[in-house]
Length: 249
Image (cartoon, rainbow, N blue to C red):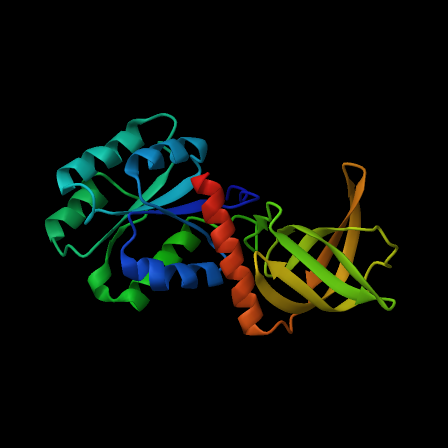
């Protein structure tokens, strides 16, 4: 079997149904898949050219009639810059002939998913599809760069220490302190307050290591497993918003 990609695949939903935006995306993020929502099929083509090793689920109930969607999908498959993109269909259309065309004639690898099965069943199908296509790669957790909009502080040796978060996942973060200090590796850091674009979380962590970047110390802190679920959800929501803003930019 081929080696898993280090960073996994980006998963795009083009013109996602409202129920997907409200329910499914949250569940997919909980399973640590990197999800993006797209609402412009022309910009989608440009994004796919930059990220050809990705997965695209298309809502064919919106924006164009079905024959135009068929040509759109075939054009992605014909284009040398995007022919590796793995495509699936999301629709409320129950037509067996339409399903046969996309699955058998066109040969879409990520399926024809009938949303009338219900959101729970549709989510299970998509999770199985993402797992089968190794969408996570070797990565266990989705991580985002913080783009200067996340800070943290904690008390160490009686003094409040502050700094900027460089990147973060629900498992841990890389960060810089405003003032470099010596902290032994494996030290437990209790009561770390994260400020994620205004959303406050309180977590514990331990120092996993220190590396040098641009002649500055970067501290790698892994969060302890006892993080309250509501704080984990805040981190996931922040990651989701950051990734979405990054792809739109």
